[in-house]
Each structure stands twice: as C-alpha cells, then as structure tokens.
Length: 436
Length: 70
Image (cartoon, rainbow over all chains, first blue to last red; front, side, top):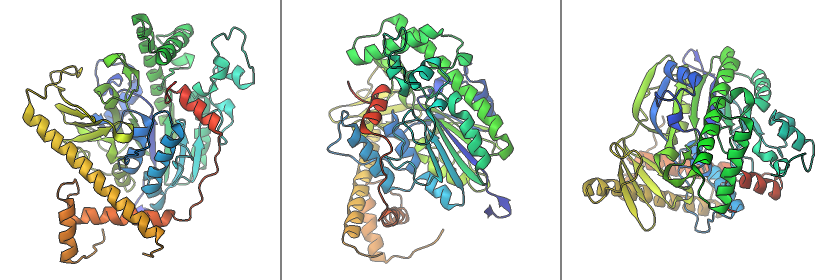
C-alpha cells in the first residue's frame, strides 16, 4: 500500500510503564541515565512537555489508544478489579483503537504487552493480527522467557519454598517480566511480519517493583534492590512512612530500571534498523519517588505523575518541541505517520491539556505555566513556573486564571456528558434493531 | 475527506447542542456520532473472549503490581 508513489512506513510504538520525563536526558539535561533515548530523541522530534491523560495505566492507556477519555462509572470502586477491567473493556469496545485504524490502512499488526490491564479481557487485542501477553500465566509465551533472574527460574520451576526464601519470593513470579527475557520473541516476530507493519511493545521494566538485570545495575547491589522492593511493599501495605534510607534505595533501584529501559532501546533500535521504521517512544505515566509523600503511581495529578517522555524517530526531521502535547493525540499522530512518515511536529501541541484519575474523580487542566486541579469537593491552582513542587494553592491570588481553567474543566465535562448521550442513543438504536 | 450534507435545521440543532462543549464544529460532532454508531454496528455480534487466565491469576498480578488495595 502506498501514499502517492512512496511506500507506507513501518511503525514501532514503544510504551514504557512508569518512566518519568525528568529521568530522560532529552527532557532534563541533568540526567545521564538514558544516552540511547537521548540520541534517538535528538535525531528525531522530541517533546519536552508531553503530558499523560492519567497517572496510572488504567487511566492513561485506554485514552491514548482511542483518543477518547473514559466515561464515568457510578459503580466504580478501587477494590473491584473485575469491574475496573470490565470498564476498560467497555471503553475499548466503544471506540476504534489505533491498531484497528492502522490495520485498516494495510498494516500487519503485532503486540507484546507486559501490563495486566492491556489484555484480551480488556479488549486490547482488537486490531492486532498477533497479540502477546507477557506474564507468567500467559497462553502466548513460555514463562521461561519472562526473566533470566535466578529467583524467577527457581520459582518458575515449581519450588514452593526457595532455600532462604523467608520473604516469599517464590510466590512472586508475576514480578518478573524483564525485557531481556522475552526480547528474542520480539526479534522472531519482526522477522515474520510482512510490511508495512505496526509493532507495539509495552515494557514493564520501570514499573515497581524495580527488578533490573545485573548488567544494567550501576547503583544497586542485588540485596539493595530487593530490600528496597520489600520496604516499599511493606510501606504500601502497612501505611507506614518509609525511612529516608529506604527512599534513597528505591530511587537507586528506579534509576537502574531506567538504565535498563535505555538498554532496551539500544537493542531494539539495532533489531529494527533493517526495516527502517518510524519509532514513537513514550511512557504511559510518570512515577513518584517520595514527592508529595508518595512512591509509585498513586491517584494524583502532580507533575511527577503526568509528565512523560515522548519522541518520534526516523522522520527526516530533527526538532525539539517545548510546547505542551497530550498523549491523547497519539492515534492521530500515528495515523499521519502511517503514510509517508511526514508530519507537522507542532500541529498537535496544545495550550491546555486535560488529565484525569481513574473513573474521573480528579481532573486537571494544565498549561505550560498553570495547573488547575479539581475533585468533587475542592479545587486548587498551582503556578508551575514558581512552584514546580506544586506545594502552594494560588487560586486566591490568581482568581482570573482559576476561573478560566475551571471553565475549561466544565467544558470538558459537558463534552463528556454529550458523548455519553450519544453512546446511549447508539446503544438504543442497536438494541431496537434499527438498520443503518 | 468526504463531505456529507445535512439540512440547515439539523445543523442548527447540532450547533445548539455543542455550544458549551469542545466540539468545534457541526462536522466534528457529526463525525463523532457516526463513528460511535458505526463502531457499535461493527462490533455487534462479536464473540466475547474466552478468558485466558483465571480470576485468581489476574488478581494476583494486579495485586503484586500495586493496583489493588490490601
């Protein structure tokens, strides 16, 4: 399939779970963790103000895969994982996916996803000719490909209690899905795909627990890495504040995980080079490392949660875009790239970006300088230029900014309400058997 | 791009519905409505997936990755 006389470009979409923007050197020049990512970003079009539509995978990936925010669910509860999964599935059923769009444009499509929210059960396989869930219980891949860690190998071999395993590692097989384990499967798939192809790879390596292969660990000894994981987990389950030293070790382990992500991009770039693809790289959301009292990715809309790295590589353009860009526009961006790979780097930047927590309880409207955050009972305004830590509510001293951004938030809600009416009408139309 | 013509009356009714929303034009609204309906029609009759993992397996994965309370 061609556009004019040029063949459609192969496309590779790399999604990294929980990778903070400020740990990538092309966004934060003080970070030296990601030399490959920085080189690729510099060679292509990089975005330093990319924003996720949500702070966790369930609030981010369904939006950036469809370009649409999710509807409210009156029955939603954090504890009801099946209900949460069902809701994602409903959303993915309602809208066209970027993979379906590309498949219709003549692409052969394949996916490797290690995140448990992006599975067949939640309808993420739509639009993929080949869909691979990467997990210990997956029907798609042999579990021996999940990790080369000795702990995992023993656990996977069925050792119920490992020697010296007082902490129960043998029951944590699902913590192991490092890219180094399954990368050869990606290579095998690449060799099978007909062109043009679209390959989506969603890696989990920078998602907690930060378990990083030895070759990429520069700061953490193995015991420090595992200790930090256990301290983190203990803090999560007990609600206890983490000791400062544990926080430092978690930061170390996270940085090593970021190094591993960079290693992945180095190896992947070599592997796909012969196919000359356009590569889009991004994370689904950020990660807290102690900011605002949080570790990991909680239901908050702070910068550490929402700012993400984003670049487009191999498009005959080298640009550094400092304007704001929401990942919600990814389906449109990929559709444009699917032609000849030509696109306008600034076309989808926008002065206002909306982000929401799962089930839309908290909403933010962000500009390059301001962030308005509203939940059911309260609203706040942060001046990101003078208060990058988002510590002080300045809504009283900047009422005009507050009211302008609150009006945009209301507009977003009104839009979602109208879309909800359309959904209901479409469902009634089909239930009545009315033909188009 | 393909143009679809609607009556002035329908266009006015749509204009009135979208005035406080982020729909920038009648075209954009009509595209959304048609996409919603066509996607629903296309999905109709699709078989739901057979579950590939047990509930316990999925719950363990989500809990281990910090997505569930407790």
